[in-house]
Length: 151
Image (cartoon, rainbow, N blue to C red; front, side, top):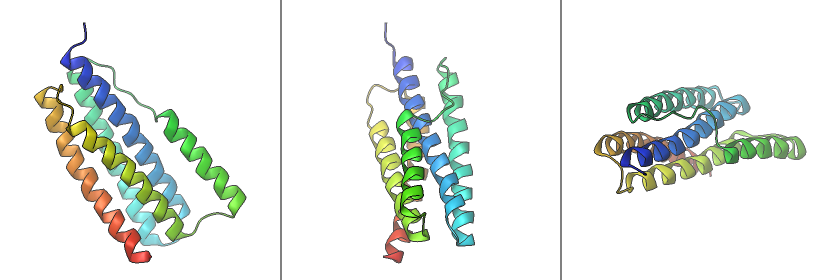
């Protein structure tokens, strides 16, 4: 029998994978930009996303589930593709990295947005997801402003 707790674990684990993708994307971005200000911003954002992962993992445990602790397959493939593209196209510049970060922010924002609309989730899960969504949206909006200031 499928319960609301099972659905909560499924949704939360999916968000964990996406958030790990984001944390790793920010870590990679910090390693590929030249501007120290961007390096710091991206490194801090990676840490912030890892903290969000820990909160989501705690929530999964509270529903009796086993939390994920790895990136999604799509995230891993994307990281490899970006690495391959770098090797064949001569690397990064800060604007290109920020463009890619913003694309990733669009993905994670949409995923959290959809999760907030899940009707079958228990109230506790909805509250954690809504709080996380506000944080993700604020981060998205900041990166979007940064990208548009460079173009």
